[in-house]
Amino acid sequence: MTSNHSGRAPQSALVSIRESGLVPLMTSADPDILWQAAEAIVGAGVSVMEIVFRTPGAAWALARLIERAQAAELPLTIGAGTVLDVASADAAIEAGARFVFSPALSAEVGERCETAGVAWFPGCATPTEVNTALELGCDAVKLFPADALGGPGFLRSLRSVFPELSAIPSGGISPTDEELRAWFGAGAVAVGVGSWLFPSAAIAAHDWSEVRRRLTVASAAATSARMEVEA
Image (cartoon, rainbow, N blue to C red; front, side):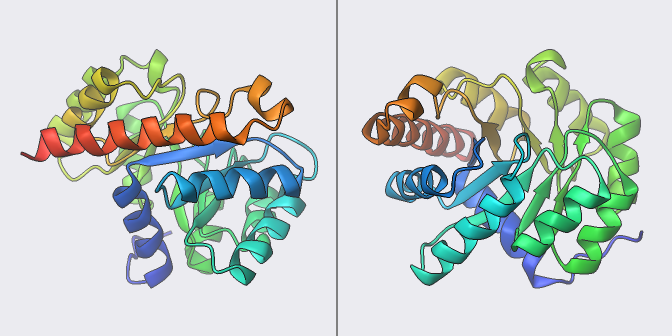
């Protein structure tokens, strides 16, 4: 696989992620729950949503969500996460995913995404993996698991030798003002957040007002953190 960023789709997906500063990760194979989550995300001013492939039927549910979002002209860039192999990548691409996140680095998954014009964000945990991902032409690197890798200090060290690195840390991140300032200050383009935004109790109770509140708080914190860093 060679580096090729001329395709508009991967670029536009990364632009949406950069603008949001936040990638909400939702785990569900229920299209109705995903739709409620999508509406809450957009209502909080976020324009990105990642559907995690951890439950049977997630690819089918992703396709249904994308169809409904397109029909409703929802301003949301939707992609897939936890894409571990080529079969899962094919399923995500067929469903209409605009981007693919992986917890690990797979050249085969990257090739599939490049061919389809879908943004590819492989998971990396070492400088060697980061270097390989960049050589393979990834659109950005997912630092995973972010909380166990040394936090923002690890990203800062990576960027000292890979200054053009676009990194999206994910895993154990709480979207507090202090933590997000540290991540954006270290050079993150966005952060992935899941369970904090979508607590299981709130989802089970269909308490979407609480989900939207959390999304709004996190989005505001991300915006504030980036503004402080860029000032």
